[in-house]
Length: 195
Ligand code: NI
Image (cartoon, rainbow, N blue to C red):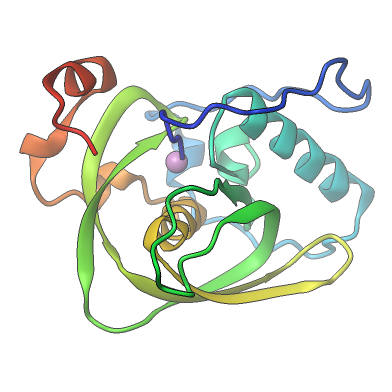
């Protein structure tokens, strides 16, 4: 997922030679429609490498989330981050550092849904308003088996729902309910119609 108003404050000079910027699959490639497979060994060297490369690719884009199928790996894992500055008074509306979710689960809490703008690194230059649950609980592990389990709301909840959908082959376009709120980022910015 992309957040176009977000600019990295600090950009690492001289990337680690072992990391790589990965090619991102764009909408239309069948890997984005796959129901992804669980990761059998989160600590395996190839999974650690994939996670490191996905973090690097997400930061380079720049994006706030990237799911494994977007880099042609149909596995149930994604990386994300929630930049600070958007939080509300709700204690569940929190920022997040770079986080990896391997074999995650997401539970929607309550019936409330809210429209919010989303972009996707697999759908370049476009944005849409997409309905999402306002509050979720999610859980996943990292490569060392550490569990991250949080109940969140706000933009954080939106990012996680967007990335989790990728693991089930769902793009935000499949969640849209009003195609009037779908357009090119540059036009939306010009029209001031985008929050
Ligand atoms: Ni996406």
